[in-house]
Length: 300
Image 1: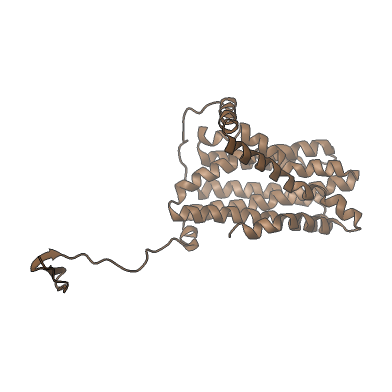
Image 2: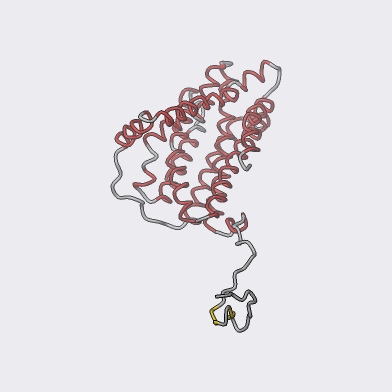
């Protein structure tokens, strides 16, 4: 049968070969894509984002300030590096044994509790004549509570935004963290030079309190994700079997271990700046410079 290509559009129908059929209009314009404005329109996300600015910036400021303080008192590059390693090493331990709490308990309560505990630990550093080794132990404890906080935040982010908005929200959080690492390091060196290390520690404690309040009153309460979660040791042993039982995963893990050496320049920034005849400001800028490339490249 010959088909008449001339289509008669009238009243939502068209005629082809003398037969009337329904006609559906198809838009040729592309579907509307999610934007960062859509992400920031979510009130919960704004509260979570502001809490990250406060806690990440304050934490990095205190880390740099304490590393500079310890080097200034001891002139020991080793102790300064050990103090600076508190920003990375305890995170590994906390990730192994504490991250599962994000599924055992309501995630908002996990984040608030972690912030309150960290505020108390940092406040304890303000006790006069606190021994240096005690300061380092407290700083390590502060960082150990970061993994359960991060795990709960990453999980609850999926409840706040979905689809394309989730990808933009996750990128925003990661980029914000990188920027605050750079800014916190630079401001930390300046704060030590102008005010000393104690005000930096006090500011860090205040940021954790403010973060806890933002999350408590800005994020909706949700039930725990699971009532029965395997123990930390069982999760760890299962993960080890999975990772080391696969050649590709083993290679990725070893590359991740090598990436830890990326933090070495930050650990020796204080003694290196002193060797050059510079002060805390230069040391803070050196630490910031080690993270600047990552902050610029992350949004790409």
